[in-house]
Image 1 (cartoon, helix red, strand yellow):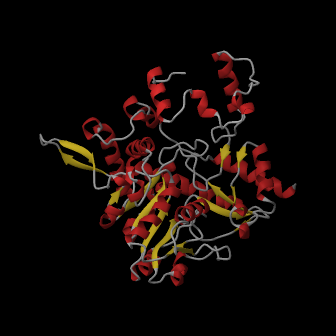
Image 2 (cartoon, rainbow, N blue to C red):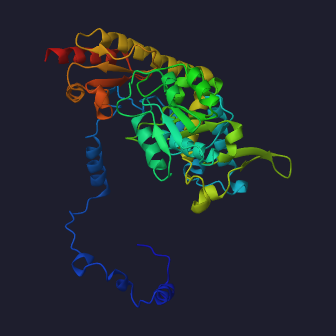
Image 3 (cartoon, one colour):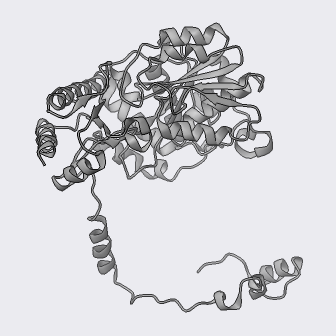
Length: 450
């Protein structure tokens, strides 16, 4: 093991803390536990190790090997080979913090391009770069709203159709804010309600209203009424989006949303067993000084040439915890770059095509499954690429049966919504084939006869 300290330096450090030997640092550890004899197997060669790891990896069931109808926030989309090829370049893969603009122009420009594309996609004026994932992004929206009103508004209204993990993350973030209440997602709330029905919860004490678009169940609702009701009392409204759906749907910025967040995984990032992902955060220009994370601006250098710099964000957001309104600092820059490359390769028409394929394949699957005896449609509301079906048997049992036939089934909604026990959330993307949908329908039909 390499250690950079010389014997003289080690002796000096020990003298400062009043010890004579390094071993004295471990006196508090029981002697019987200090140097246990490890029962390790015989060492392997590199070739043997590679074969063993490959064998272990093959025990995983992935969307590469099976038909996948599981969504619920992370989706099996196709990522062009160029995305991975570009982000693996050394200057991007190993880059970290762009605090020194004179040596970080490539990284800064990549972030600037990402911000520009996300602002265009969401219809907002400014975008940061970025957050860990969709859950932390919407939680940061709640924190921002709280500080925008200087803590004088103590209520946040959350739609029950917001992703369950996002709701839990918001509550974790805000648990230390004295007097702050979160309402709207109680267990007895009618899950069929339209977002506009949340108006009765909004009052002069509300700082933020949070909705999802499309919502967790895949439904697409008009948000104009709830946005107007929110603004009528001077509160802010945040919309959590599936960014890929904006290839077809109107962006929240055009509806008047104050904050738009989202999970960027669908923009060129692999499923990867849960991450790393990308938290999208965009807002209106008037709130720019409250935005957590990094902002890159375009300027000119002393010679009048175009240059990029970190701008506006107070440095304590990154290094002085006691003065920061947020402690987010890692910006998922590599994931943001991947999404930038993905959006640049697809362009406006390509993004629309991917969204359209996802939409039409989901509706084809919905139509086929809804005709199977024993399966019931849960909602007739418009939807994007996900839908809910009530099953004749426990979802867990059905998913086990599907897995035996090479199909990853939908999300068991009973895990997070007790009222939806026996309901399955199914998703389709451009990767879903007609043959896979036929196979799903056949097995679901078979289940009813078992």
